Length: 107
Image 1 (tube, one colour):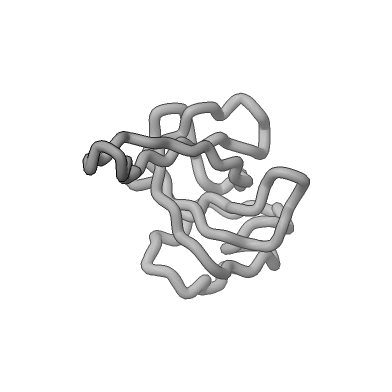
Image 2: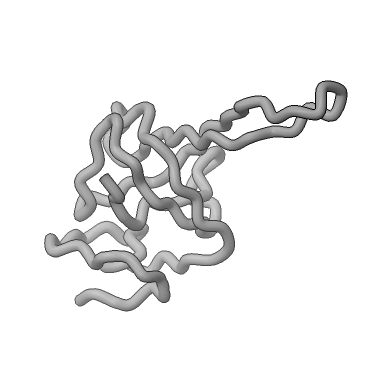
């Protein structure tokens, strides 16, 4: 049983029985969408995503490159490895540091 999550992402072809899956479970999506690069995928159900963005330095009137890391839940139906560019969506807090879930792989 798959359900529409309200985003223009591809629904995974494989089924999973994870209750924290936005496609096959009952986890609802809300808020921000973040695209970033997977830095670490060592944990079985979590990935670390690095997001880069320009930050204005007012003293020099120029932009500096800044980055932040986000922890996201990885469902078994989406295959993610280090170096992939993924789209994550905000959800309810899953654990102490995880409030995002991976919804699709860009490349």
